[in-house]
Amino acid sequence: MAAQQIGEAAAPGEPLTLRDRILDAATLLTGRDGWGKVTMARLAAEVGVSRQTVYNEVGGKPDLAEAMVLNELARFLAEVDRAFDAHPADILDALRTACRGILEVAQDNELLHAIVSATHGAETELLPLLTTHADSLLATASTVLLDRITTYDIDLPPAQLAASVDVIVRTVLSHVMQPGGPPEETAETLVWIAGRVLGRA
Image: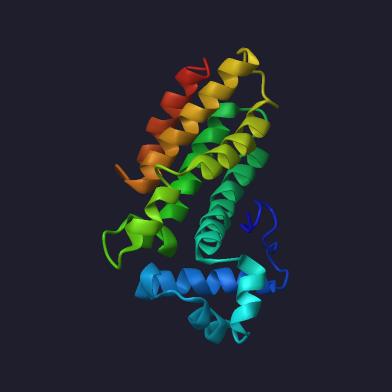
């Protein structure tokens, strides 16, 4: 798989790698013109490199699609890390802040808007990456959240804790895909659900 792994994106303040620049250009083109019009040649021209260089960095177009989604996922997971770092003693406050941050990022996310819209043919190739073929995304998000949650005193056996985290991730993703209200209001609902799933109501 040519997709970039979570955590490999340039940190704030660091110069963008060529791969980052290609993914940013692909995201921009997708949001502006639609996924169907994104080609390796257009990406190469946008970034100022050869088409072969684009292939070398990201693989083929399916690999590019997955890399774009995982790159955006990193932005959402950064909100999780910030929230848990800010609330090391209260799991519900950490989850509340994380959910609100994720939903606020989702509001202005161009790639997400392109994927969930029914325009430009975006849904035919990109939407499954967030729905029916979202295994990689869900596994990555669940692993990150599980790692953070296990630092708190949660009285659940490992298998039940993993299942609870999976439920939380899937529920949050559903609201990212189809918002049900303002981020702050939705975050309260999500943390209420998460509290009961984790036995911390």
